[in-house]
Amino acid sequence: MPFVLKELIMTFYKLGLIGYPISHSVSPQIHSAALKEAGLDGEYKLYPIAPDDKQGLADLLTQVRMGEIHGLNVTIPHKQNVIPLLDELTPTAEAIGAVNTISLQNGKLVGDNTDADGFWNDLQVLVHGKHGISRNLNALILGAGGSARAVAFALLQHGWGVSITSRRIEQAQTLVTHYASQQIKSVLYDPTTLHSLLPILSLIINTTPVGMKSHPQGSPWIDDLPFPPNAVLYDLIYNPAETQLMKDAAQAGLPTRNGLGMLIGQALLSFEIWTGVNVSAEKIDLS
Ligand code: NAP
Image (cartoon, helix red, strand yellow):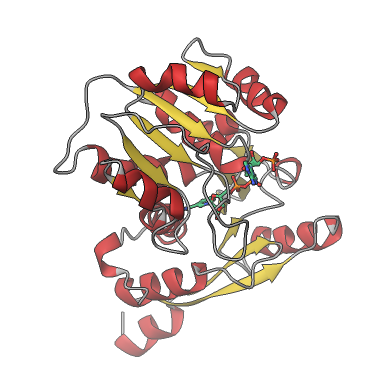
């Protein structure tokens, strides 16, 4: 094919993010860097859609169906709202009950979820890092909202026992009921209950927004509760790079990791679904 003609028919990838509010999102930076690294033309736009704007959501999905938009990420509050508007879910999105990636495949709108693999892949850096981890695969998840679902799914898939705690215990119980597995249980968010769990824990994951910039400062770890001696701590928060929880855990001798790797990982998995190109996380520099 003549070079000029090939250039003319190269796809201009129209990608974006649906959510609300999303003005703070760093996804455009990640995807712009991925497009550049992959040598593809395109853009990644923010589509703020208010929680009750059903028409706005439907109109955007129509644009994906028409091929006018090539891929969308979905974040709060639409990860579950979009499901009835899609034709198919991947087994992962179906199991988690939430969608973060939409693409058009063989004329069908398909919902996928890359949060679980993004988390799991990045967790390996912490778990198999220089510190290693005991063979005791028992995790405690703090918080039981949207991201906790994906985190719990990843851990259960890989044979971990999961305890999940939230200030509203019903929320943790709902998540436990959703997965219907012997390997997951809800536990009260109180010092006595959590203290009794400490000897078996090898991993703590924070999925609450406590400690995030412009959210409640402080730590979701209960005051005066010691940290388990042989555990590691993963905090889904990435801004600030080191939360109060991470500082306290590190002081108690726990290896820690923030959620930036998960954020980049889930983005690059979405990018691969849309473009077919696998970009390495090391190539994404957000500084
Ligand atoms: P979400 O659905 O709102 O869930 C948050 C959970 O934290 C809920 O269980 C909530 O309980 C609990 N919580 C909120 N404030 C709390 C407090 N002061 N004390 C104790 N528990 C509290 O949010 P999400 O989507 O799961 O996101 C949670 C965090 O993860 C955010 O900081 C987000 O930026 C981060 N995140 C990171 C990534 C990544 O790729 N690294 C991906 C997704 C999310 P209540 O309902 O009782 O408030």
